[in-house]
Image (cartoon, rainbow, N blue to C red; front, top):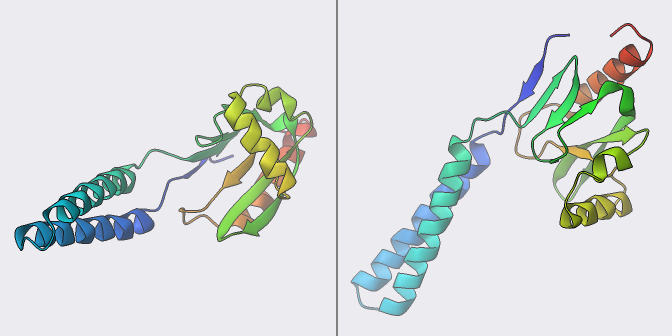
Length: 164
């Protein structure tokens, strides 16, 4: 298969970067006009920190998800690559403005045991919300969730039939 790479979209971070810059500008204005030097300085610091954080995110072009013959790698999951032989299925779930491709694993513990205690709790919370323990979060990307889900299902079947 031709590898599929999904990178974060810079749109949302750029919008939030503009908000951080605007907040910093308000802080400068408050301090410079002596309306409130303390509030102005605090607003400038917070706005500057927000701007710096979202500037870094807007410039981050590292792949977030890579799907290839070896399996699924999602940098945000923190479990490494998920092998195709471990994938039983997938489905799309939308909730709270987020889009997820839920990856159904034959033995999720093989992957969740790799997680820190805090991330294992997050995985359990995902399960309680109707997601799978390990779900590909497509929020902040331009990826088509249904197409990605179909690809995951197709590749999992292909590799389990011994053709992959």
